Amino acid sequence: MGKPAPVSPLAPASFPDLPQIDGLRLAAAEAGVKYQGRLDVMLAVMDPGSVIAGVFTRSATRSSNVLDCQTKIGMDSDAGAAIIVNSGNSNAFTGRAGDGSVNAICAAVAERVGLPETRVFTSSTGVIGEPLPHDRIISQLDALATNLSADGLPDAAQAIMTTDTFAKGATATVEINGKPVKIAGIAKGSGMIAPDMATMLVYIFTDAKIARADLQALVSRLNAGSFNNITVDSDTSTSDTLLIGATGASGVDVTGNAAFETALDGVMLDLAHQVVRDGEGATKFVTVEVTGAANDADARTHALSIANSPLVKTAVAGEDPNWGRVVMAVGKSGAAADRDTLTIRFGDVLVAENGWVAETYREEDGAAVMKQPDITIRADIGLGEGRATVWTCDLTHGYITINADYRS
Image (cartoon, rainbow, N blue to C red):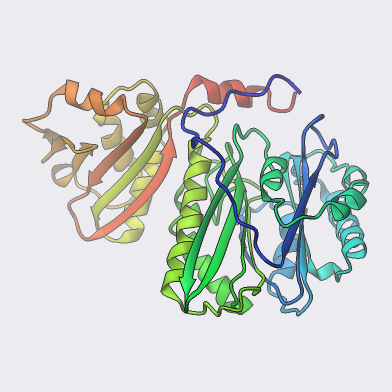
């Protein structure tokens, strides 16, 4: 493995202090799946009574791990649950060999931690199309099981990284009926980010009490406004997985509780933003806000067209207030738009309106906005009440450097 990439300039100042979640234990190990000398496999085990919900990529070439998780996710059970994740190899496009790897890992984990195989969930991330050396993962199970700890989340966050430049974590605690309910999550993701459900890999844990079906409905709804609204490079992974486990150990029923929903939404949005801030080669964090569209769906179409445009993203990288590229992206999106009702702002600077550059606009004002590390591009379509917000990053030479020789 070559020299580690420098940490993204958009990274948080530090990894958060994640709380212990009662009913959850984790461990990480070095299996050498691809990387040498670093953590690359993590195991999470939840106590009996825990429930699991999740959302997954809608890619037509989903990995064996995703397909297996989708089969199991809707099953109710009073047993505990386990999640095992490796980095360095995605086990995607590996045919029956990939299915065999998943089956072997699930059987070995189930035996080691005393769970039914239907309660073992696997994820793999990394290179596509190469057989997963699952024996290396299985060989670490004794060590993983022995080292399970309530404070294992930071190591787990390190173990799931691939081209990430920093580990990603987020947490929230909310008081309900006088009792604290804790939420803590980790994520990985840096490239191949254009989710059609969630981001690359995300694992969130809470000690809240909630039925599986209610948790599933909640995470599916919140996902639509967080992970499903980020993009780094417009490419959707074969392995995207978001799993959330609720141990119920707090004894606090959060079904329908607005405060818990707000807290969980905050954790999910925080993790989603961290993925964008670690976008491969990124130097700018970009918020794209679209208002005035014919409907919300059209607004999201426009926002993604702007956020995914290589010309917009390279202009941002060059700190060039090239508003004409935003006009282009709106016009090509396929959603309803009108040249003469379109208004564009960079931050709070009015750039264009009524089919032409604004009379008050000065190029130096737009350029000043583009020099900031966090930039907001606003487009009002002028046709209705539809609105959407999408988060992205710029496109730099660093992205090419990382991805031109990713398999080497």
